[in-house]
Image (cartoon, rainbow, N blue to C red):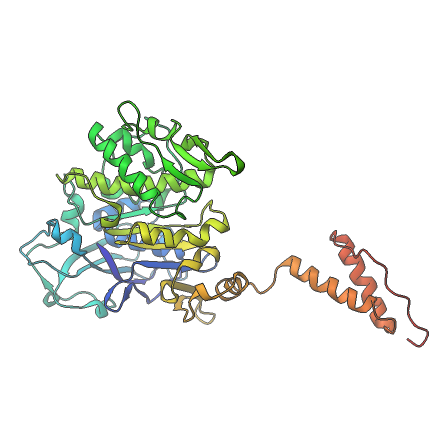
Length: 459
């Protein structure tokens, strides 16, 4: 499933807040949220995860967080989350299940409400008749909906085995390789695959290799390899992942602790090392990418499919908090373009604090979150100029309001010192300014290496 629109009211600093995730009537596959700390980037991801999870799962995910989700400026204000979702063509071709007597729908409307002095969400969902995306600001009316099922999303999320092609996954900042043989099968897959966004719980990651049977584990390893090597910028130093050997890769231990990852190493050419010997940045990237692939294949297996879905056929909504986590700036520059190539049918909504990550985006894919100085509410705006046309300095200034850094200020002071010190006709006031600048530069360890010229008698 894909998100089309999201409306939030009464959640932290979000009042009458709406985001459109479509482009030319179709789901926009990439949305990157940018803004200062405290401007609700993670809160928006959480609202999306709650809206896509159904009422019961939303209450499980938000357990203990209900009060912190409220707008503290008015705790009597009701909290509302409205979502509009669509469906992908691949899922329909593979027989996506739609609870209720309904022809193949094009929209799903969901809503959650947290009333004043309550600690539990009320809510529901329904298939929309026609296009009612524009009405998210109001409660849905009965005439908008089709089908006889009172809450299709709740039925989907509660189904066991799980129904395929309603996929949503979310990743918080805890993205580490698990210790082999340490993971357990998920108790509630639709809850567990988004839980790390709420409670910092560990992800399954490469541990899926221990959860699948032998044949499915080898399929999982093959699909991981294909995904990781689909684009040179996804894991820049990794050139190959060897899956051979006796029995192949059918456990997490064989996948991450055996010498299977080939990496570039300067004059040494290529080295073959375990994933656990790689840097934290590589381990974190491998962990959540392996988890994403594993979640899709696990759902396919649980739903009775053959479990062989290629990365380019995977559909669904993926939420990632701080996508740039642990990634060097040179890696960040090509990372989103690599994900776009590898998973063209997955819809990503992510947050970042990095200007380098924006280089792979179009202007409409970036949402700037800002504070309305009169109301204190968070508002969203889109840029018009594509970031790929901007320099690194322009990216910093345009998206992060940084037009100078501390070393730049020192450089300006050094240039001013040089200008005054090289002028034999400087005034007494300029001479005092030069002495003050020199003292400040020396205190910062950036003192000038030459003495000022002598002042002329006519100064």
